[in-house]
Image (cartoon, rainbow, N blue to C red; front, side):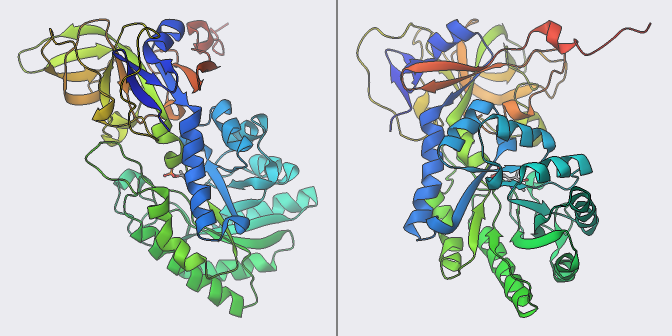
Length: 446
Ligand SMILES: *Cc1c(COP(=O)(O)O)cnc(C)c1O
């Protein structure tokens, strides 16, 4: 499937040119591809089918990566379940047509009111992260006269070998219960009147490029499941969390879903438990890009700056994790005229492959790509070699995950518009915010 390709000097997503999207919806603008979202989801389910476990598996998209209703709806139509971490995310999934009985509720600080909402709609499972939370959930369930289905998020203490900010499976992290304490907490959970033990889960980190730590975590879960069974505690499902990494730069090789999942599926295929997967980034990351315009070129003695109309408030990952995103120039010429050139690589929007033929009259320079926010940390790319003029359009690639979802209104900047391309159509899926909306909830003193 061809997703991002060059046509007449203009970069396209599916059948729509990015220059046309910028002209119609303005910049900054997040652009998602329905075909890419679908392909990423099917890569999971195809792999589960190939290993013979599809009939006892549920892929629960971790919506914090990108929680736009249209994105959720694309996955809901494909039969996905959802992994949520707040009452707000529960409301989003329901508004997007997700089915409650395919929702798992993760997170270290669920409030009683959020638990009650989830119990009322009948979610599949609460992923419990502490003994205290278990006690609270039991009370909430009792007050509602119902039974809460729970899984314990166990911290398998494996090193996911990723950025410390997105590593979650070590003893020193705030997430999950200690491996050594899990059995005792399960025993206690099994004794509670309004709790039903149904599962076990873990989530060791994000942007994992090596499948080995996740497979190691599965081994640890399985030995705990077996130990629990000898104690009469039956685990119906094993939830291996999310975390599969994606390719951000063309010289870094992220595993395919098949490669990433195989080592753990070899172990799980021999079992009979139901399986839950919680992918976030890998379903959406390379299905989106951020379209931005160069407003000001500011050559300097030490650095050249290209000030663009997207900023750290739109895309926080560079400032927060020193994340690297490919930034490519988008041709400004109108689409439609002329024949299509060679289709680009399938499946993703990343890679220098997507670079357009640059204007030969303009030599490339090394630029700091920065936003207009008043912070030195407001950068989107360091030392990028691009041939730029003011007014040029740029695409910041691989921004479908943790892009818009982490956007803020810092500097009273309205959040970007979001659109989804579907074939030759483009749909506005979130309007650009208006400035008046940003302070509509504020009031002056009397
Ligand atoms: C964030 C998160 C995920 C998704 O992680 P990705 O790295 O985006 O796949 C899954 N499960 C839990 C509990 C999470 O917190």
